[in-house]
Amino acid sequence: MFSSPFSSAPASRAPVNAYVRTGVETRVTDADPHTLVSMLFDGFFESIAVARGAMRCGDMAAKGRAIGRAVSLVDEGLRGALDLQAGGALAHDLHDLYAYVSMRLTRANLKNDESALDEAATLLQPLREAWKSIGVATAPALIS
Image (cartoon, rainbow, N blue to C red):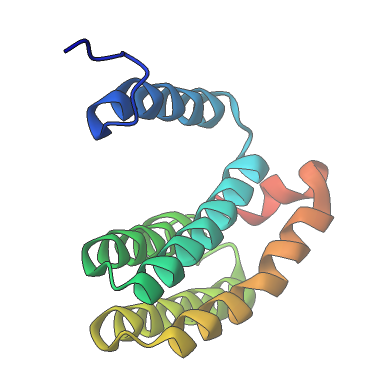
């Protein structure tokens, strides 16, 4: 039987995944610091949506991967980008907020607690909107 290279089999997703990965890598390489932080926020909210869907479908493996990605984006990306010495009290407050969000995400993963996902998203949504509104011109001074 002939197998189409365009079938819906999981193996056919590999080229698409590679293309998407390359596109993201290119955007990261070419991005200014403001855009990179925006991408971290966008990735976080995408991961929360995937985790919520997986939780509702009972796909615990996908839920764990999505929440793990969200935690990494918060801990290694957003929290890691803070300049605690130059950023003063605001940077320290954000550091603490990001730690709390990571804790809530961990709870969401362990307890299948969708309300913890909602809380994490609710806490970061105003920051995402504020970050997008400040613009590229002023953002580099806020991150390392």
